[in-house]
Length: 263
Image 1 (cartoon, helix red, strand yellow):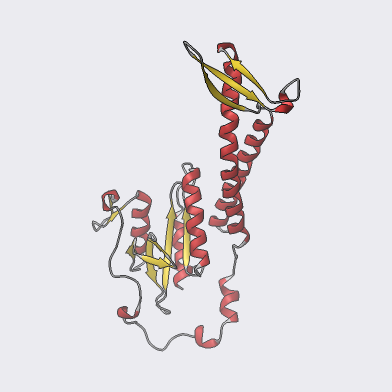
Image 2 (image 1 turned 90 degrees about the horizontal axis):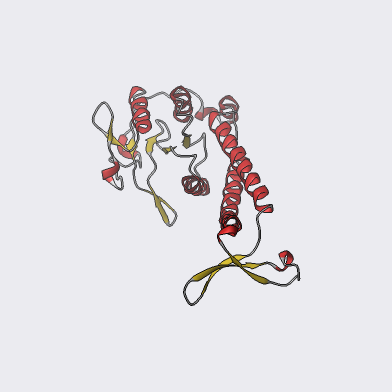
């Protein structure tokens, strides 16, 4: 199992565990809604109970005093969970779909399936750089966020991106950082764009550095789905890299993945 697939499955497991915990907690919280009821000299906090919780089996209202603060806080917690659970479930569904469509492959098996002209040694070397559609320069948004430099003074948003750039330089691979790429009606800025030395096709590297954050994770899944819907296949013409607070990127594994992409 590749490092990327293992990390995706680990994230999915954590999200499912979180969903289960929230759903169990929700079962024990009181139903109903809170509202404020104006009085002459003050405002009362009221609880409108569900019919199933009322002794008369009808919707009833109850004023909550200081002694009933735990009830009010439990109702607040319930409404928070009821808003969080659908978003978390949607994230789980998106990630499950991504994992289900992941295609592990053997490079040797793929080579054997190709016509000999695509696997035999070429009789010439070198390609015209102008034939590649890769932009010649970065088109980064929000340049004020480019606060980290690599050994030749190029600026990046994170230290991990600096490490990736140094790795590409050590492999003599030319890259463009955050170029402008149109995918249908949307425009994205992949972290790195390379070109395949033979096909001259674009190869992308997308680095996701805050996978632990739910909001970031949702945006990450949407971006991954956009790439997949426009013909970018992990292991073929795009490399997804993931980092959490507890685990950084494995540069040796990254190097091996890049070698497969450009081989």
